[in-house]
Image (cartoon, rainbow, N blue to C red; front, side, top):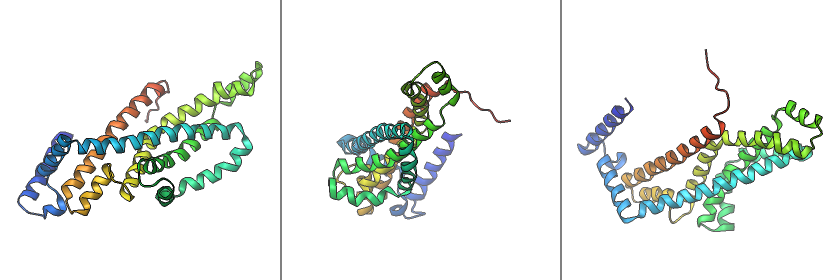
Length: 247
C-alpha cells in the first residue's frame, strides 16, 4: 500500500508539473529532480555534499553523546553539583541553539568545525540530562545489596549507575542523532560553502526548486540510513527489556 500511494503521488506530481497545471518553478518536477540527482552522483558533487553533512553530524553526535554522558555521570557522583547544575542545564537546553551560531562563527569561522559545534551543542545537554536522570533512577535495591556485602561507592557506580545511565542514553540515541543532523544543516544554512544545507540554499538563491528538493530528499535518505543504524543498535543492546503490551 505504501508503494502504491508513493507511485500515485509521484505520478500525479509529474503530470501537474509537466502539463503546467501548477507552475513547476514553485512545485518542482520528479523527472527533473531525478535527472539532477543522477548528474550530482555522476560528477560527485552530491556525494561530496552528503559526506560533508554526514561527517559533521556523526562527529557532533558521538562527541555530544560521549561528553554529555560523562557530564551526567559526574553530576550523579557529586550530589551537590547535580543539584546546582541540573536547573542550569535545563535552561540551557531550552535555548534555541541557532542563537549560538554567531558565537561559533566568530570563534571558529564558517568551516567544518562551526557546523560540528552546532551539532555537538544540540546533543550534549540532552545526553547529560539523560545520563543524570538515568543514574538517579537506578535500582536502589541493587545499590543497597552491593553496600550490604561491603561494596564501595565506586562499585555501586560502575555496577549499577553506569549501566542504567548507558541504557537510558541508548534509548534516546535516535533523538540525539536527529538533533545533531538539524544542528549541522542549520549551520550550513547560515554560513557554509559545502554540504546538503548549502546545496538547498544554493537552489533557493537561483530559484530552482528541483535542486532544493534534491537536497531535501538526500537529507531524508541520509537520516533514514542513520536512524536505521541507531535502531539496530538499540535492538541489540535493549532487546532484553520486557515489552509492554496494551489491552
